[in-house]
Length: 310
Image (cartoon, rainbow, N blue to C red; front, side):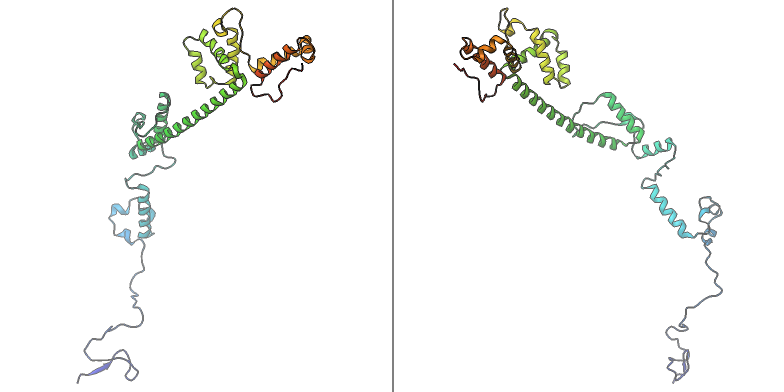
């Protein structure tokens, strides 16, 4: 029978026993953590001590002396984030222009402004002067735009300008229609005549069409004030074929002409007496004259036209 002994305890106290000369589980282990009083405390500079001398003295590592490897690791991660995937370091805000130029060129900016191109595919045509295009190229190069950024910006600008031009044209056409409608209402039956008179000065003094083209380009060819002024001027230059031939020129009265004629007749004492006196021999003629003028002055149906009282 093998000899037994009490392991790490006294017999009869519940301690585990084992045969002498045989190992036991967790042999020699105690309930507390083993300590080695002879082990030195952690030295944060230890990682630098194992480096070669040229690295130990490198100025880039001196800020981390005594801080431990974790500080160096954090610094490395931050540097990688700043460098980026291409290994480019973003210049500081106060970096010289040359540093920024090198950076822009490295990420895709052309060496010179002429390196930019205006895309044509899926880009609407808009009126742009050559000088404006050169300014855009120079400005983009000064700001460090890449070729793709410049192309994208021009494409968006062209679409925006095309939409603005389309909207402006629609507004101009609407305004032109409103102006024509207003002139038709004002001139009534004399509209075609007044239109002819308004164009007469250009036929006489603008054979090449430069003046009328400039007026049209400025959006004034249908402006009521301009058209009415030219019609008055044209009336002074009217020729026989405009008025029906012969030396006695006669014009179709406009509503304004008719109103002025009515005002003139009312100041005529003889006409007024005949108009208001139903027994005057000239009464019927005066009423007829007034009604004809009233129909011209008021193209819309007159609710209570003047009727003969005789």
